[in-house]
Amino acid sequence: MKVLFVNPPVWYHQNIHYRLNRPLGGPILCTVLEKAGHQASFVDAEALQWNDIQVKRYIDRENPDVVATTALWHNREAVKELAVLAGDRQLIVGGPYARTNWPDLEPIYNSICLDEGELVINDMLTSQRMDYRSKLPSFDDIPIINYDLCFPADDWYIGNEPRLELPEMVSLWSRGCPHKCIFCSNPIFKGKPRVMSLDRIYEEMNVVKRRGIKTVFVYSDELIGLGPKYDKWLEEVCEKIAPLQLLYKTQGRCSERQQLSTFEAMYAAGFRVIMWGIESFSQKVLDNLRKGTTPEDIYHSLRLSKQAGIKNYGFFMVGGIDETEEDFQKTLLTAENMRKQGLLDHGQVSVMTAEPGSELWGLASKEGWLPEAPPARSHFEPYLNIPWASHEELLRRQGLLAEVITS
Image (cartoon, rainbow, N blue to C red; front, top):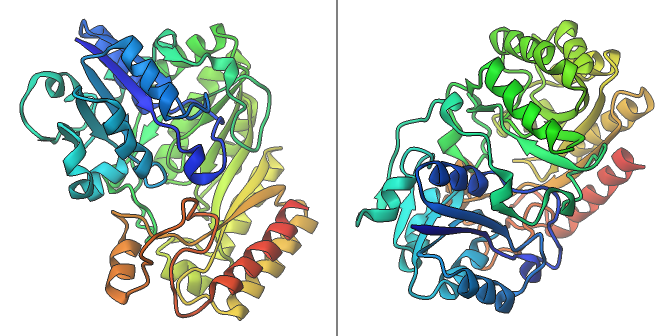
């Protein structure tokens, strides 16, 4: 069977082009299907900046039996449009938005994946069922992506900020997060983290190295900060991959339990940036967001990272539940001090957003905070009608904090 995975274009909905890095889901499932004897390919229509006419022309030229896609909050309208472009072909949908809000998509698809797709994608091609659930796949059984199935090529992408050397590629070394942030919209990846073996990671990084990739964005939920057992695993991974001399960046969770040895191992392996989910320096706001962290945790983690020679990139959020001006000023002044101390190198400021599947979405629905028509880029502009801060106030806070952490 011939299957075409499409990352649909969203730029004309959001007035911004996404050309940062190739998504992982479609290419992984393409490789699974190829190994099972199917003909599969992936096209990133968003990175190519195509419009609907170009997408339709490509689908018709390739003439697949099945069109598949990943439904996210930010591309939900584009997915619905893709269903029209696919015509009478079978349409398979997966992804966080599909899993958490699938009745909204029900009119457009033939089958939907409600869990991880690697173990069920073959069945979805031939079965008449509508919704599929799956056991969790062993991470080492997930094949290394056959990048030759993907269009465009590696060098088309410009990499995620903060950028190191290009070309850059994304890799996933673990799945799962035991934490309960109220704004998290992907509950499928909650729970005990599953990690890849050292040999499996080394094999993939060796493939990436041979392709001429310079930087790997390890896009794993909180690669560092999940506890001593996982930090020990990460240290062993770093020792294994260090001879490949690649550069890495990743995301981390601030924790008082972190040890300098882990950061030193990461630096020796080529890690140069960690992106920390800081959100706020107000303990009240952190608690309301269910972050499970403290300002002391943040200071501890960023100090150790800098001591090892790794740069710190902070993710901040304004408009957190019951965030007052006093709470915001605490975050603003602390961030400014951390910049002066050299602990914080750069960052990004978003606005608290509720997405389907998150605890925050349920709360916002109950309290009447949801607008009738959310903006396209709801993470970076005011969205919720919250009672503790107006949209104008949120924009002011966002601008002030952004100026401090990016100047």
